[in-house]
Image 1 (cartoon, helix red, strand yellow):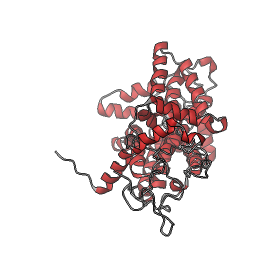
Image 2 (cartoon, helix red, strand yellow; image 1 turned 60 degrees about the vertical axis):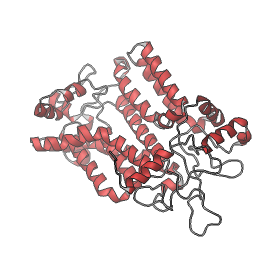
Image 3 (cartoon, one colour; image 1 turned 135 degrees about the vertical axis):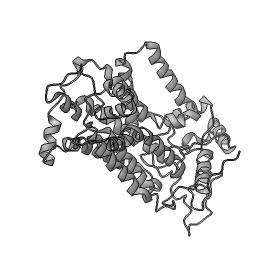
Image 4 (cartoon, helix red, strand yellow; image 1 turned 30 degrees about the horizontal axis):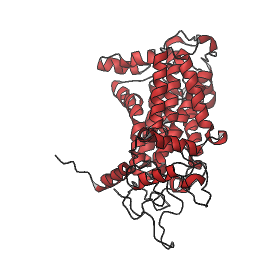
Length: 427
């Protein structure tokens, strides 16, 4: 049985797969780490990840052997080149997930006061009414299902879909910025929820304005109607034991959907009406299901905008302006005449360098970039025997970095002197 894919899907997919690095040589990663070095001003994000991970492991009420297993497994994943190309960029996401899970074990004596009336008061002052309360006064099964799909289903699948689309159809390197912006936005959101715990609308409906405490369990809110509709108890169990039951502000459902729409609108602008329609429906569903006030949604969306534009400013020109540098507004096609080539001079992957260029003035167009072990493959130790071995390894086609960043000026504009390097990726 042969599976046929249209060229618009097949060609970018083959191009993305061909850029994958398939080496399992740990020595290769160790040499990269050695050349990369460490600079606090450049690598403070990794330091913050490490400190939060250590704190999470410290408070986590799990056996010591389980914690050691997590450390060993993740370290091994970073040292193996094949797995590190996925796990290293995803470090902010893993840090967020670990911190979110471990937050339930933070001693209650360490936690601040829970604010019950702040959010409904702010909503009434800013918007003239409790918008969330108005949206929950009339419900029916059809609206329940319409609200449940984006809030309880699509929300958990969408980040993986966006990452896959960026990896296959956008210029190389976009998915690294997606992981950083998405991961750190959620991580900061959870930190705010723990420092400034606020009761969501379902608490006001259930308890009124009675002071809350950390012995109280969470609630599925309007999702309880979905459990009743399908005859299950999944959402009741999930939300009753949520690690952060009083994490209404900011809304990370709103933050995630806004981040997804911002990235998709930037790289695939033709679908903007669809992306933002989804955001609008999800915003409504969070209030309809009594999980968030409108002020929570505004805070979550604003947080996403801050991180999106921060990482947009760190992108190379080829990613910051993908529709004006020879890359079509549609899917990125690796075999087109406008394809952004890999670095074929050295045969080495140009992982996200944090410096404008090497000693010879060469640049991969990625000043102050994010991710990757290497600072520049054209560093002063480029004539080292180990580096030459690595170059032969990659030129032989045994390995590719799936997130190679093109060199500035390698877009093959008409009228440029000299032949274009790698116009048309090998797939």
